[in-house]
Length: 399
Ligand SMILES: Cc1ncc(COP(=O)(O)O)c(C=O)c1O
Image 1 (cartoon, helix red, strand yellow):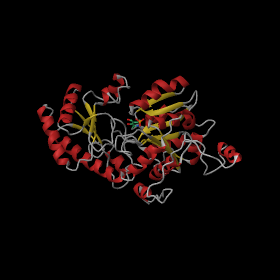
Image 2 (cartoon, rainbow, N blue to C red):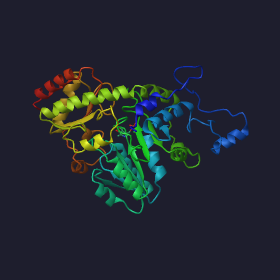
Image 3 (tube, helix red, strand yellow):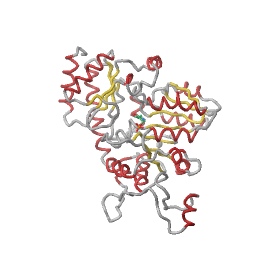
Image 4 (tube, protein in one colour):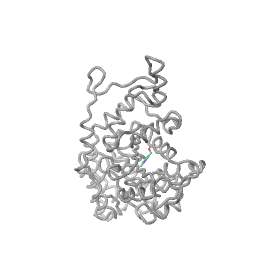
């Protein structure tokens, strides 16, 4: 039967303490116990339904976590203070000194910097591979490898990972497949395709209003319990906990995610087709020209399209900068990093979100100077937006 993530969210019924239509916000960092014995049992992890301290868990965070677990089809989830606050504890929980990670080389710059520059301080080494080439992925696995890491749709090159095949490889070599699904919520459900752990930066499409940072780890009850363990859990001990007030606001925004994703995807497909027809080098998984178009189609859930992210290449950084400034002046979007906002956001990844990746490596992976990454907004009249963007490109002799 087809997996329907938005139905799973819709079906969650949470009442507030006084019958409110939204769950009550737990405005407390610590919790009382009626008996000292219950406090002891809670610390030992043996008192279900008792809260001990909000860095560990809080009612508001659990409501949001359960909603995201329902969306991803995992047993449970743990929300965190940022996307990086989800990624780094997961990797540190799964790997210790001497262990090895095989990672896609086209990933968010912060994750790349963590794996390349920070994790080696703890003797955790990473091999970066072209994730679309399953042979090179398998060839990079060593006896010390513990984790296979990728993004379902990669930042910023929009490469698509074959999650089913990667999950088979992970099983064969006894690895955990960890997938960052930030670019494709609802469209792709990595856990249903075989991933062990699914991560999101909630900062992006899921929250959708560019007013907070947040993250989530979705996985088995056992793994999430491990992350929260008071003695050796990376989430508990590294402390990147989401605030309860924020968890409540992200949960309310999650309720409209399906409508927003439909509009982001519809607008992005419209613009991608027009830009390509104008002769621009355009990358969008919804275009037939995308090397993984068929793969994306074979993995996607019905209705949510190919996502809101696209890239164009205008040849040189100066041209890219001129175009982005002109589009911002004409109120077509903002020159800003991040994604998933109601308004279009654009940036040149080579000099911003992927600047952690050395220039020669950027070249090798096809991340060119003139690349502009667009997070397409919720524009009600995308034809009007296109005409104005087209005018900007004409003015600058780009087309
Ligand atoms: C794909 C992806 N994963 C993770 C992150 C990190 O998330 P956060 O900024 O919420 O820590 C980002 C941020 O840009 C991202 O694009």
